[in-house]
Structure formats: structure tokens, C-alpha cells
Image 1 (cartoon, rainbow, N blue to C red):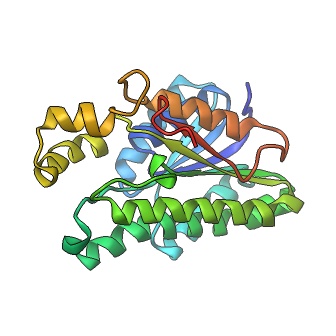
Image 2: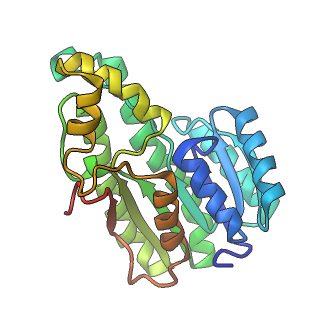
Length: 260
């Protein structure tokens, strides 16, 4: 088991990509804290994963934009299990508008969840990793960490910012054995993406079928969505990699949509 008895926190993990990563980690023997706004859903997911074993999971409430909640959640994990070995900063949302129509409140909400959440969770976990002289922090970026698309100014700005945060953390964390990397998925058919299809069709003036075939999958090599399992497998590789030979990197998982 690649993560036997390793202690991981995965944010936004009650569903979607986060849940797939938590499941993969538990299958490799990890103790996983599923941190989510929806505490009941997090606890239910944790109970289900624990039954599957061989690792185990707990569910905790966490609003990643709240420094108090983040600190309390991390402290709870440390008190119960003795430390933190892996952080996957995955919590995120999507809001699409043209820049001139983008409500400032919605801009700030998206930036806060993605970028402030990444910063606050990393900040809370780092002292515990530094104490152990080891750790892996994985940020969830996107192909939009590398390039832009219409209607996604806030998301693109946040995901570009995550690259800068991860690279700085890699420089600071290196002397303490802490690695920092970014996973950059293409379109994964989660509820977050399903919601975008009619919104983009409306704002771009095209059909929903065209959104899928041209906007989302048009630049892939095989016209396929990335799966949550694809992303989870990369997250396992980054969590279990044993040296700082792999740090400060961004790995694109997009069926060739982006090759930077």
C-alpha cells in the first residue's frame, strides 16, 4: 500500500474529484479527512470509504474561506491522528460571465474559494509537515492554469494564481522535505461541468451539443472527457512520490487538450 497510515486532508471531497481522490487514498491505506462545507455528506462519504478499507476516513466541516474553520479542522485531524502528511486543496466552484457583466461579489467569491482556500489550508498544514520534515501539498489547478477561455476570467485568474502559490511553496518547503505540485485537469464531467454546459450555450449563442464537442472537447486528441479516476491516479502519484525531484510542477491531465 503506497500510502499506508499516511494522514491526508482532502478539501471539497464529499463528491466529484475530491471524493475520487479520497477513495483512491483509502484504497492505498491512508487515513483521510474528507473536509467539506456539507458536513453530513462528508461524514456519509467517510463512513462508506472506511467500510471499503483498508485505510479509513473521517468527515469534517470546513469552509476553506474561513481561517478559523480551516485552522480548527486541521487541528482536529492533528489531535486525532498525530499529524498531516498530505493536503489536497481541491475545493472549488465555477461562475461564468463576460468580464463586463461579472458581478464583483461573484468574482470575489470564486477567487476566495480557490485561491484563499489554497493559501489558508496550506498555511495551516505546513507547520505540522515542517515538524515531520516531510509532506506533500497538492493543489487542484486546471488547464485554465495554463491558458484562458471566454467567460472564465475569475476562474482563470484564480487557477493561474495557484501555480504561483505552489511554486513559491515548493521553494520554501524544499529545505523541510515538503513538496508542492499542481494537478491541471481538462474537463471532467462532474456536476460543476454539467452546470456550465447550458450557461456557456446561452452566453456563447451556440447549442449545448456544440459546447461539449467544440468548446470542451474540441482540442482533445480523442474527444473524451477526463475522468475523476484519471485525476485521482495522478494525485496518488504526487502523494506517494518520495523525493523532491518532483516539486513545483504542474501536471496536465486533459487528453492532450493542453500540452504545456
